[in-house]
Image 1 (spheres, helix red, strand yellow):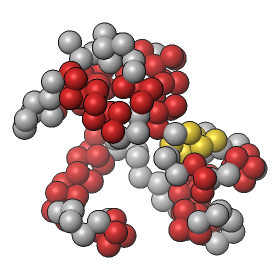
Image 2: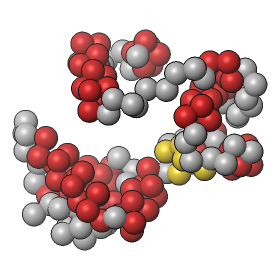
Image 3: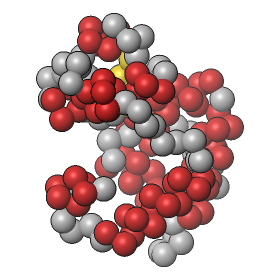
Image 4: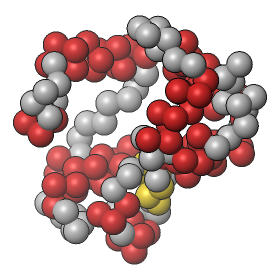
Length: 146
């Protein structure tokens, strides 16, 4: 969290702390530990990303979901049987495999946006601005905006 605040000083530390607690409560096994010893052995275009790959290796991840694909070269990740996917592609893959997962997540996400509530059009526009044009292009019924 310290690194995030260093790069994004406008963020509120108390809100970030609360978000971290809520994430850890919602997904109890989301924390990865015991990967520090791997970091120095890894080589990526941006050395500051090595901890992400180390954590992925440690927990046996198959995919790193990131908008920063250039810093996770396919050739490097292949050595560990890991792929890097853009969030838009990852969510579209989920929608193909199990549309109900994406539908439920979209419903919950939109319902949580109460202050102010978002119209379907605004919700879709926000996904587009977030770099998720494929998700924004899903039929409204599939992303449960009705």
